[in-house]
Image (cartoon, rainbow, N blue to C red; front, side, top):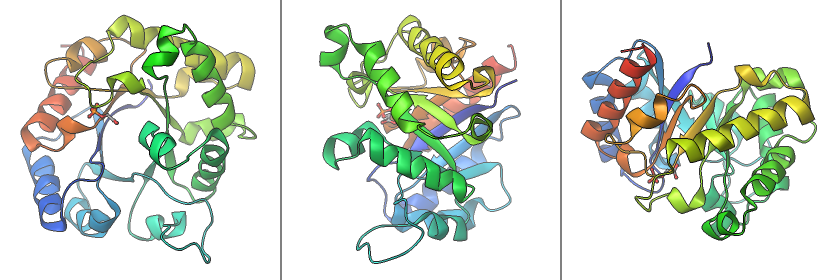
Length: 255
Ligand code: PGA
């Protein structure tokens, strides 16, 4: 069975003290049996959060990285630095990075290659804007992003890759995609992986992201094509995030 993952993307939130409190709360509240729990604090809190979650069920992600291992790149953080402090996953190509920080399919591809080279699991984000959906080009956009992100990536490498479908119009808006809308794109992504990249697409986890809350996770995670969630706003509170993890664990377990 594909891995099921609930990942919390804290974005630009939480001081170190707040991050420690949130991470501790997540560790202490509930240990799921089937779902992997991943949290992505801001860079400044990663080191301390790594200490809090060491030897627990919670795994650590970064929200971004630069593709070079080291060098004169003021302000950037390298995959080696992330590995050094216990980071296992890295979110690549989030729509906010594409929108505000000039991330393109090309930079996403460089980062995916670098993450894999340094044994970090990239969580690669794709998704259309509202305008693109309304113009009926959702699948064209997602296909372009997938083919761009995975240019020159071997089929074997997909054992260590997670994809997140995040429709931009659903991120931070409270407008969650319907399970049907998400499933349609998840299936399409698997087709592109299978038919155009010769990947064993059945084994690649595809998460949904965009306004996941405790009251809508059940209908999404019930879908066999949806392997979990990338949670923004609701990952900033212990009660909400843990509730999402609990519900997912129950549904994945078939109850
Ligand atoms: P949201 O963010 O849950 O606040 O919509 C999701 C994301 O951007 O990963």
